[in-house]
Length: 189
Ligand SMILES: [Fe+2]
Image (tube, rainbow, N blue to C red; front, top):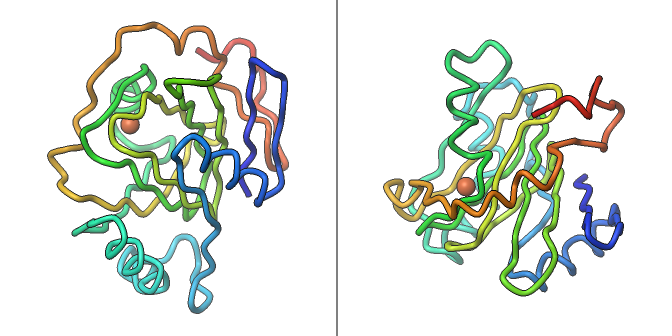
């Protein structure tokens, strides 16, 4: 289950409905998905995609997405830091950013045009859809692991365009949810 924090107001949301409502007000879709049948988080990609086929097809029809694939990174992934450095600065895409988390954790920061920055910590079972042109950035949590289904309208639209605002520097990329706390959180950069 996700945890949403609004650093400017000190507010924290942990209730699914409250999270979905707040994010909907910012144009972001949040939902919890349950697999059609039990599937281990480390199952091959095609098994995971088939376990969530119903939800994927519904979302494809609603959002005009044509492809679904899996992103899978862990601390041993070659070039992980280079990959992350592309997305941990405030940016936007000409494509929706749609992610369903299968394993691991991630921290999205969303910078709405008319509202305070939101930190959304996601974990297995969370679906998030960030509309195109929304300003945001992404960090991994201390487990440095995320496995997620991605949905695309057009994969070429996923190029990041940087705002160069440096807004991300004002927010520590620290995750608080689940059963762990990052060691030396203040030193994570
Ligand atoms: Fe992005």
